[in-house]
Image (cartoon, rainbow, N blue to C red):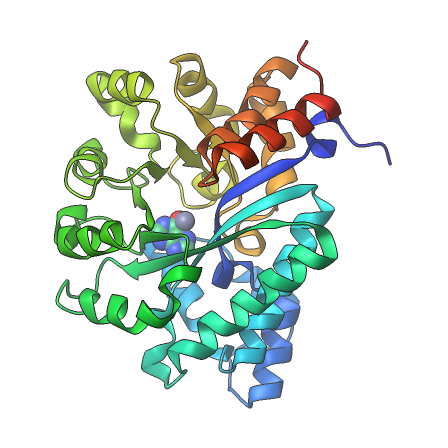
Length: 335
Ligand code: HPA
Ligand code: ZN
């Protein structure tokens, strides 16, 4: 099968939840390995449950599925499988969300989560040449009083973590809850991002920028409700890590053909394309690109811009950015 230019191009993926890359087959295998009871007999039954009215319905199934993740080996296997799959989509740089707070209440050691995932990143760098790192996530619906302890637990790994992120149910959980921990992470030299404007209002995007001082916004598609905010995001070059198939599966848009990705791109925003939780939403990053391109009629130049934006938005140094952009130019020359 010949690949389209966008499928063949070297790409960055900046918005993927490692827990959300858990394929049904691996979920069942880990349930058996760890003797965790789950209410599904096979992968088809699991896939049939992937039908969501909104973010909350998805999160409840997603959290239940994560109960099979118990050991450092599990986090290694999960991360390794995702990175190998991303490599097949010609992803060369990955910044992946990981949420220890979603696992430690089950008695999983904080270190098992991080060491497993980090070891898989180390191995993928050697095996596939994939670079990248971990965005340590906070659950926004948990009390803000818990967040400093999460950061404290992460202290021994502070030099190996790339960024701080914020995820979970958005409505009613504004970014302003987390100002103090974002200050701490900034002091440690971490990059900063947050989910905002997926289901929540444009005000949450403004709060993430002004109070958390994030460098990019995860999702952010609801910025369009505020023309002033769209202008600000364009003028300040704030990247959005957009996940088109996720947005359709969680009813943020009624269909891919109604997604605002192309309008945001045309408004001058640094839009990037990502997969969020691929097995749950029906596709890895190449599927997000090709299905969006088909549904929205994206030109080759627009598709190339989206890929290029991934490297512009990545938390990498100037030298690596130059190399990535050079490799993209070589693989897919500018028209
Ligand atoms: N939004 C919020 N939290 C999440 C998501 C998402 O799309 N995916 C996994 N956790
Ligand atoms: Zn997400």
